[in-house]
Amino acid sequence: MKDSRLKRERGRSGKPLKRRAGSRRELKTIVVFCEGKNTEPDYVGGLKRLPQVQDSTALNIEIHPEQGTPLTLVEMAVGRITEPEVDECWCLFDVEWPQNHPNLNAAVALADANGVQLAISNPCFELWLILHYQDHTRFENTSAVEKASRQLDRRKGKTIDASVYMPLRQAAGRRAAALDRRHAKDGNVFPNNNPSSGMHRFLEAVEGS
Image 1 (cartoon, rainbow, N blue to C red):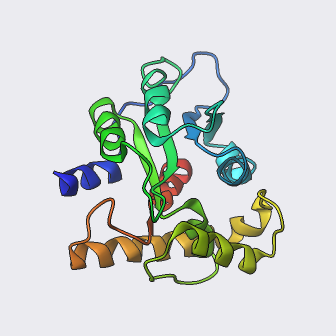
Image 2 (cartoon, one colour):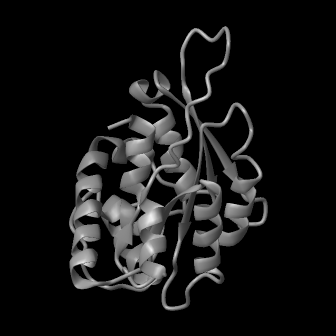
């Protein structure tokens, strides 16, 4: 069951793009739901500012008002996915180690049943940031990954300078995809696929690559 859920997480909804009459550009509208107020929104904001993204995709960021859990994020997305102007909903959230977020499998199942797409980072989003600079194949807890990420970009607070990461995002995507292949070969299924990040699939959805 877990294996099949992970495969579904990787897929796109297949939902036909809805176009607004009278619009000069036909933009795909993606609503992105984040559990954190800093790192993930900073990164998505960096994508949003890229000229090639502005020409093809409207990215709308929604942050849970109380730093929600994966399940509450998916519930928010389910409430938006049927809106006529929305083409795709994506939830960005972490697994967290050594203590996982509650109701992870329920969040994945609810997303799968409603066409909500997921970009899950394991143990945390900072793993995705590390992959912009280098490979990372060790099983790690959240605190170790956060520390390693800060050492690489030398940030002192919780926010990131997204412009530093944008030129490196394709390399990060290749490294994340390689981690997926490694886990598949080793039989490591969600949520035991540490380290991993589904952000490379989010990039594909945003940039159409």
